[in-house]
Length: 161
Image (cartoon, rainbow, N blue to C red; front, side, top):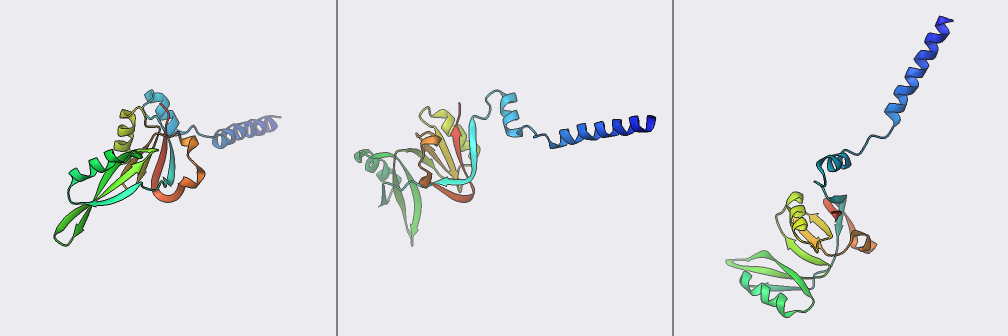
């Protein structure tokens, strides 16, 4: 009788252990966000980027020439510059963007991108693509499926608070 009791005890212990192993672990990212009290206000989708065509691309000699080009174009929501070296002449590509893009900055990591989004009330979605930060005034759920592209290392994140 004690052998059967011991065997049943072992079976019960094994069942409890297997349930603990098989039960899903809480998402560490979610747990950290809950514990930190809204420390991380983003739902992140990895290995995705958003493709919105630029409004216009202009070659300019100085950075100061770009801002007026955006101001004169009623569809332009923001602009950014990309340095372009032509022999000894340094020029810039002035890239004009339209909504839903509201901000672009190069050489920015994900955390810096999140900070910029948090500072802008109109920012609802962000993308960090090859160390470039793009902020959008469109809800993640309203982004058309054909705008999402696959790219390892990039992220798209929905601002949640």
